[in-house]
Length: 113
Length: 115
Image (cartoon, rainbow over all chains, first blue to last red; front, side, top):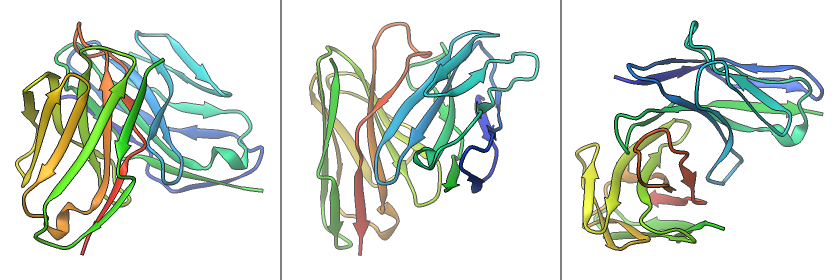
């Protein structure tokens, strides 16, 4: 079945540091890939997505590239801010069914000033 | 634009009491609807999904149930809460149609504490 594995946290960085959160997936079809962000006490917000191989999703300075050859969708940001502190979830969804969105366990990021 | 609402925002209930959480979506028709639970410090677990009024699919066996009495209303219920039902409950919607690959949009969540 489909699954997502993401880097275990927590991750603590200083402001302006470079961020990478690793995400790899297993899928039998051709999934779309997503990154969601959850700020403290809130629901999940879509951060970015990519729907086919080599697509790059980007938003708010975050980027992730859909790599079919390595089955990865790593999240990166060149310079993090304190306001980026949140939990980040990698997820995949494919054409096999309306319910088939799989989430990673989440990675908590804390950015210190 | 589409919006999704959940209430209540927080809830403290005794063990054995009933539960009713409500989710409504505005600005779209015939959405797919989902209920997830997020236990403390953990990822999301899909509980139920619905592709139409009265159509509910359950992902995991449990003492919770879901209903969809109207097109844009999704209710999560329990007759008797357990301690293990504590968590953060998230409702989500997506565009119906092709199935899969659709972005899911989440509500603000309901934090439930069962004592």
